[in-house]
Length: 312
Ligand SMILES: NC(=O)C1=CN([C@@H]2O[C@H](COP(=O)(O)OP(=O)(O)OC[C@H]3O[C@@H](n4cnc5c(N)ncnc54)[C@H](OP(=O)(O)O)[C@@H]3O)[C@@H](O)[C@H]2O)C=CC1
Ligand SMILES: CC1=C(/C=C/C(C)=C/C=C/C(C)=C/C=O)C(C)(C)CCC1
Image 1 (tube, protein in one colour):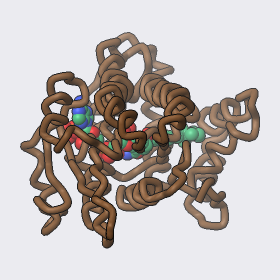
Image 2: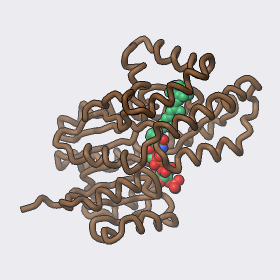
Image 3: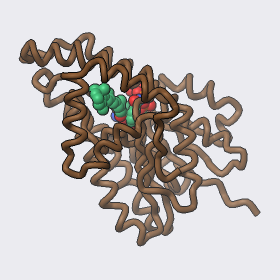
Image 4: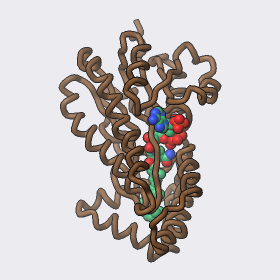
């Protein structure tokens, strides 16, 4: 007899990776999952519902969930049968980019409230049930910026470092309860994420930022970042495929990068524990050797430079 479907709760399904993941899991050929696809604004559910097709109301239901609200989380879980979540996917997230001097603390706190405390809030809500049942899987959509900082992304990278430290620590205790944690680490992904950042940047004035810093951000970083997204950006479908595999795994990995084209950059940190190789190379590429950076970014797009991500 087939096992009962596992209930998978996903945050941030109005667009991007969350939406794709919800649809792929709901269309699992072996019908192993019942997906609760959540979003903070149900006014945006049209795209998801259209993509879900006949799975809607069968293997996929849509529910309201704002990861920044205790009430919203409690209300959402009360609508799930027995409140039992077998797999939690912490996907909801926001970015923030720009010179530090021009960004408000409130904007940085919003990044932490969503990316870090939002994930913690959901875990605290589902963990007692998982522990009681002695089973569960918590997947967190982290980032390559959870592994290494990127210039002009300080607050966003810090929020993902916080996520990495929190969930790595928790993973040890939870193995005792047969509960697994997986940190999925995409590089650039072509979703609304980048558009939202560019929109934020186009209207921001970055008050209090000196002209040199502003010029480094606008004339060096932004074009390099655009080129990187263009050359190595992954589709949300490809990232979702990796997450589906992680969820289906009998022994889920703690960490999983998704983009083989980006791994030469994360390898710069892994190769030198002192950190200097990554920081100095990034600095030289961005500030000293713009032609080499352009060439390097083109090389990353070429399959012969790909390094494998581990584990496969
Ligand atoms: N795109 C990229 O380059 C990368 C993205 N990531 C991570 O992937 C995850 C998904 O991002 P992606 O799909 O790319 O971007 P999208 O902007 O397409 O999706 C982000 C989702 O998070 C939701 N969200 C934001 N705040 C909240 C909140 N308070 N409560 C509930 N949902 C919320 C958004 O909802 P709403 O529509 O209401 O704003 C949206 O559904 C994020 O954690 C991001 O940090 C990691 C690496 C690279
Ligand atoms: C590492 C690096 C760069 C930029 C990396 C970027 C922009 C990464 C974006 C990752 C994202 C969007 C993750 C989301 O979570 C530069 C500036 C090209 C200089 C060379 C080194």
